[in-house]
Length: 321
Image (tube, rainbow, N blue to C red; front, top):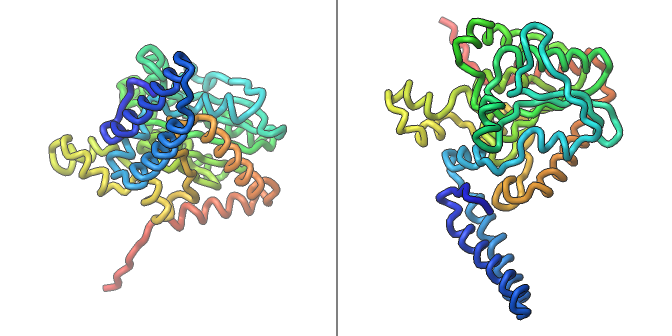
């Protein structure tokens, strides 16, 4: 594995180390421990499934933030073919926290975009930790409108703690940029598939998350505010973030029950960070299925369904009096 460890994974990591040690010992001493290794690997898989089936919301947040999870660019490079990145919003500059461009999915032309986080300190700074400025949302809108013009489906990958809250972002109208995306994406006449694969934080996520199919990885999170921010507002103390994560109903399981998302994408045993190849293949299968359902629908019907989909979210009680 890696130095990036989660407390509840200690027993899994210890067992994985034993397996690696046995494999190295087998190679160096020419002693066959294949039977012992096989038994330990079966035990490891069982342990992963057992532990990950009982994760609390706070633990799922830790998994969603794991530095080893595939990033948007990993999915773009391994799920799609011939990706051509496009840059800039034609107004201010390029935002490296949002990437996107033209690609092919199994031979069919698509537009793909999403938030991009870094994998180390230098990369995190370059990508602004996946927090988009207004120009990032304007770039995303430009790409989606291009997809509509050339009749290409859109696949949007969401992974951000939220929109960038800096002074420059406010001066350049980050709230207006997100609001405009919400309005415009609601009426775009081309299929939009949204995949929340890490963090889905507030309006920063929603700015590229209006679509016809909203999918979410098993250990991803999606909420109106971070647990730390919620805790600081409600209890005047950020230390109760774990309690806030329960109240916020931010896990994929909660959101499927509430009707906010359409489907949970099952992750490999022990999380997507443990088996990139498996989650990449799963992602291909899910995108293929979603495109099959959406491509070919009448454009006006597509928009009408999207409208009804979001109108149906939430429950209201009317009282006459």
